[in-house]
Amino acid sequence: MQIKRKIFKMPPRKPIYEGKAKQLFEGPEPGTLIQHFKDDATAFNGAKSGTINGKGVLNNRISEYLMLRLHEMSIPTHFIRTLNMREQLIKSVQIVPLEVLVRNYAAGSFAKRFGVQEGKPLGHPIIEYCFKNDALNDPFVTEEHIFAFGWATPQEMDEIRMYAFRINDFLSGLFMGIGIRLVDFKLEFGRLQENDREQIILADEISPDNCRLWDIKTGRKLDKDRFRQDLGGVEDAYREVARRLGVLPQEGDSYVIEVNAKAPKVSIKKSKTVAKKKKK
Ligand code: ADP
Ligand code: AIR
Ligand code: ASP
Image 1 (tube, protein in one colour):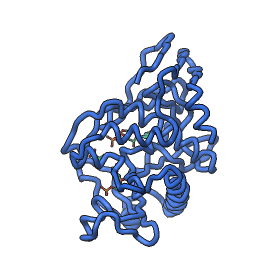
Image 2 (cartoon, protein in one colour; image 1 turned 30 degrees about the vertical axis):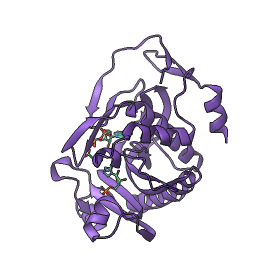
Image 3 (cartoon, rainbow, N blue to C red; image 1 turned 90 degrees about the vertical axis):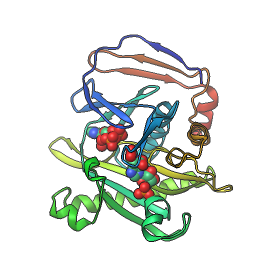
Image 4 (cartoon, helix red, strand yellow; image 1 turned 60 degrees about the horizontal axis):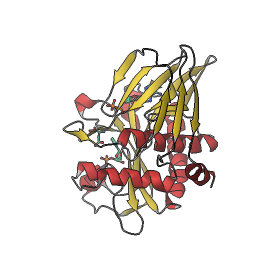
């Protein structure tokens, strides 16, 4: 992966948060953040940790692509624009402290909890929620807990559920079109304060870090389970997802970043192959 990069000016940035897979920096305008994708990988709530070379670059691209497609489907997201190979500008939100899990087939903790075989179709999509709290190991919760603890209101949960199922419908079809089964995934939502109005929008990322993606023909896992389960070929799996989506960085891609102290102007020139594929 050889990418030409021209970086003109990079003002110092204020770090806001360092997570397990990403870092957040203060954005150039009020209400914005810079989301930096790292190669760091953890599993089982940090119990296992390592590096997946190139993951940050690939997840930045994959998440950008999927968020843009969801935006076209009128799903509001935090994504503003890509800044460089590892960073994107996002709207700062107050994260609803929930992991929203949507499952189409049994896998992972679900298969274990209910003693069913991985890959069992669930008949209809199942939504589950975990309280986002590393110290408590992200416990599963019901809406009763969510309302009792005030993590979200009933109206907010109606919106979150509606968006989660719409995202599942859309992404299941999109991945099916490239020979991939969307087994399950995790979403995060946040509250955006804009013009005296509060709105629920999709935040965080959508990538092989938080989706289970299986090749439809071979059943090969193309996601972070390769890292979790020491299956090998982790980097290849992430690259394969990016390649099928038509967003694999190509030699000749050049990201021109003009960062002003105020607002960054970015122009991303993609190689013809990528631009052509993305138009499909
Ligand atoms: P973790 O915090 O679980 O280690 P990451 O390493 O992915 O996860 O860090 C990214 C953090 O940024 C997460 O805690 C996530 O909730 C938060 N986040 C994602 N999108 C936004 C946003 N638009 N505004 C504020 N916080 C966000
Ligand atoms: N997930 C959950 N917490 C963190 C992540 N990334 C994602 C997994 C999987 C789905 O949520 O990547 O796609 C369900 O995970 P599990 O472990 O509950 O089966
Ligand atoms: N992201 C969580 C962790 O880092 C859970 C996982 O992906 O397995 O442990």
